[in-house]
Image 1 (tube, one colour):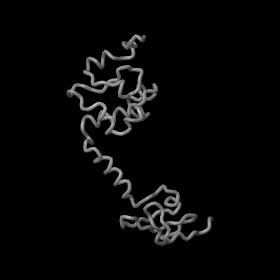
Image 2 (cartoon, helix red, strand yellow):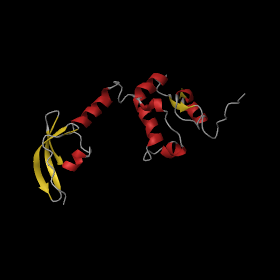
Image 3 (cartoon, one colour):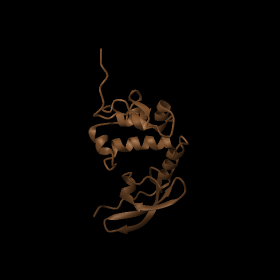
Image 4 (cartoon, helix red, strand yellow):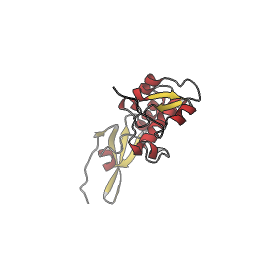
Length: 166
């Protein structure tokens, strides 16, 4: 059993230790006060390691900021951006085997929606979707366009012919 450590008054991220709430076997539960004023009872090792950083307010703030930063959450263009990332990065995504598993990536600049939107703008119509000009290439500014369903069907790996060089 580890020795008891008094952390009263010590601050860890947004939580300041107030008092021991209870001891359960080999671990101690502490009562903390969060910077926002809420109390949180948590296992001391989870707080001191950084696994718990607040009463929950920090995660809520991040979710709110993420959803309101650009004011375009849940628009069609935002969903296109999200799905592009999903198919390239999430092994649980249905289209991942044809994108991420084949090494297709989204460029670093497009990790933020704002930069993606600045580079590609709105699709010209509801029927247009994002298309990689070179189907072997990544999603990046010089390799995407807004394409019609017909253009999408024609632009497959089987039909792709690299442009002549030199």
